[in-house]
Image (tube, rainbow, N blue to C red):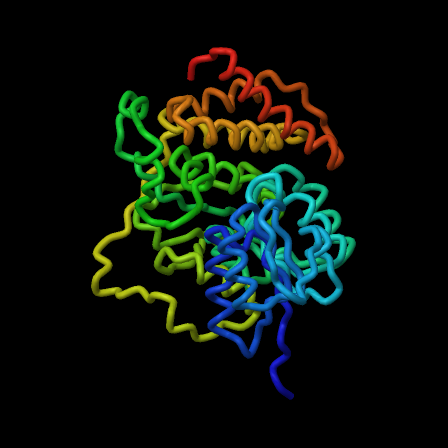
Amino acid sequence: MGIQVKNIAVLGSTGSIGRQTLEVISSFPERFRVIGLAAGENTALLGKQIANFKPRFAHYNKKEDKLLVADVETISPAEMASHPDVDIVVIALPGGAGLEPVISAVKAGKKVALANKESLVTAGEIITKLAGESGAKILPVDSEHSAVWQCLEGEATKASRIILTASGGPFRNYLKEELEKVTPEQALKHPSWKMGKKVTIDSATLLNKGLEIIEAHWLFDMPYDKISVIVHPQSIIHSMVEFADGAVKAQLSLPDMRLPIQYALTYPERLVNNKLPRIIWEELDRLDFEPPDTDKFPCLKLAREAGERGGTYPAVLCGAGEAAVELFLSHKIKFTGIPKLVEMALNKHNAVARPDIEEIKAAEKWAGEIVTDYTARGGVC
């Protein structure tokens, strides 16, 4: 019996994760076929991707740019995510844009290679419940959660603790007062990873690691007090799992997102890909660890607290964080203004304890608006 070709839809195909996903797919033409591509406004790159991969479906937001491509049907990301001919949907859309496609894919019982952490952060209870009912499989693409997933594979007993690693970002050794002068250009120079702008800034503030705590809570059914974060500047150990007997398993590799992407697409197999870098152990002279400094980087603490409080607080966390990052990238607030605005939104929020999807989206939108309005009215951050 020959290898069955899997149909893949890539939502967010022009972003960093989307581009790397297509690179992995190109390494295995006998195993994968791109059936759908969805992007935002980068129609120039999307057009090239469509010409190269010849999908059946496409979506893009910038409708004034007409993609003159024959035999491609335009459908929404949610329709693409749940289409009966799609075997695996890679969801790498940014922020709140990923929520509806994730819900659609999970309801349809799909295999979801998830790179949009905000969907689980804001609606983890709803999504995991729907997945349990439909049989959908959520395959984490984030390197940290992929590492945990790999460490848990084959274990008969539940882990007792999850340890997520963080690079510490480009400002790990800065003094608190030095963070006041950080520029967007400096913040976008991550020491280990090549990522999109939003996640790069979130990594610099450690908000991204806070979101990952909430995501890990839902992915692995782990209490918040059993999920810890350790700073590991080399980014070689991507996460660790501790078991009841004290044994700790870790997943190690060079920092390259193509490896967790490939693992999600090829699971349960591990395939040779000569394009992926290997650790040269003789050149690896040290692995360092230190606790995160939540005084300098309060977003990590704010995120954990939002997760523990539950309800619509995580949606506010995401909405406020996304708006604050945009303001920082536009040179309208300081780097240190990001956690201040996030905290302000969380403090002003009247939470809904058991929200539905519309209430989650409303809370996220409200948070973005209150952050933007505060700054527009002269609020200094």
